[in-house]
Figure 1: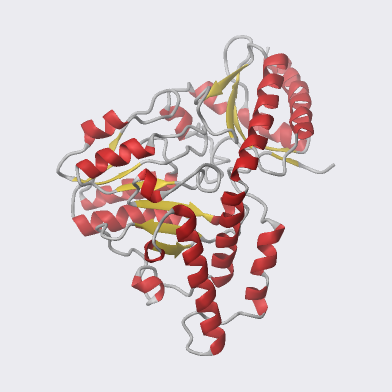
Figure 2: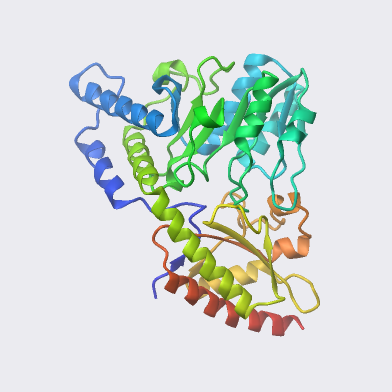
Length: 386
């Protein structure tokens, strides 16, 4: 039996059209983009064409687009680069950010930086007033993600950015789960920096973008070469860059169709849960207003306790259903998801929660198959728990 893959927030399969555009850069146009000969120049042209396309798709200037190895590097580079340039001693973020933001923020404490965590509501959202109250003269940067990768909640980025600009504080957003899925225009949203990762939008792994608005105080983090106008050293990943630009173009062009498709899948999933599991589950995060492709569900036993989440994942996997219990960067950990803890979900329920994330290849039939298999698995597990 083929697997049913509902873990698209972790990674996506490379679109075949993207792969076709990447293939020539593996073995035919393989030159180092910094070499002076014709093969090098061809690679350089491909990179600059990709830069211009990505800039156009997100409303940026080409000079503001920096290629990286992915979202984690982009997040690290944004936070550490702004702190180094401003020499200020406070960073504002939230406890439900990806660890690619939380961990570098925590590491800055060794340099005397204070990290201020804004508390989200049960929907995972940070409100602009919280940012306004937290900013001080010592604030170097505010970093809040656009779409939460475990909950699907959407932060009011535009309003938060306006407050940051009023206070002259740079604003960064991890947009890994929003770019290519909902409209993202850096000028309209007012971002000073954002992070993108190719493998979340049917592009290749190991390539991403850091957008830094011209004029933003920022010092490059990864040094050692003249690449990216001395803003990110290292031999350019030409194949990955070409693939990322291609993937983003397709994602933006087909965004509306994908949104409608995800809404159909989500509706089918929620109806199936309501019909078969009434009183045995809860939705973690926003009930309405979130992105349709991410759904976080916690399961509850008759005595209102949680199930063994690892056993639930294992049983689903045996039946060919691929889901996760949170970010792929932390799956397998014995600790409950820091995101679910951050919105106040009790540990027992957090440990019995799974994240379903749809992709464009998923079907209504797969959703129905999932609900059917889940019902049988939960019946066995709940009977064993009594």
